[in-house]
Image 1 (spheres, rainbow, N blue to C red):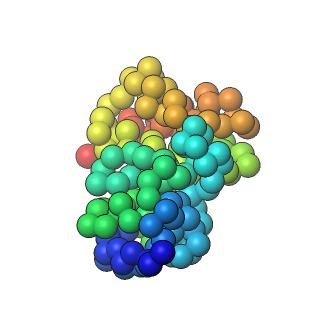
Image 2 (image 1 turned 90 degrees about the horizontal axis):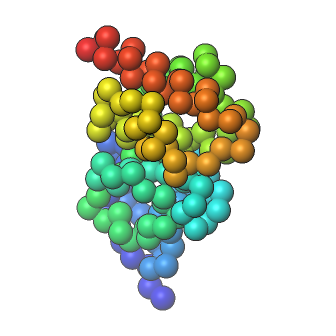
Length: 159
């Protein structure tokens, strides 16, 4: 098989790479581009640990082919912070102890940012529904939901 040339934008930066036709976006991010924040938890789209955005849509990168990124805008956990300045979600996850082992955390943070981008004032029920595709074996979810809800309130107050 010949490799496919892909031109895309990742976290605002123009990016080019070569990938195999059957290579997942997750594998491209981790193995070709060194962006190891997204994790492979299941490889079947059931856990959300590999969540990224593609043209503003939340997806499991283990289910998207790298070649499908051609011309797309990709958002990953690496793009959440602004240099050394953590995103308010990241700060609240730390302050509210909404993370433990860290395998699910990148995907949950990307999903939570996607939620707040689409709905800056979500209810708890909407937040739980939006994050339902992200599994966490350690936290019990309550601290995660509280961190997202508190971040939403803080971001609304700041704007």
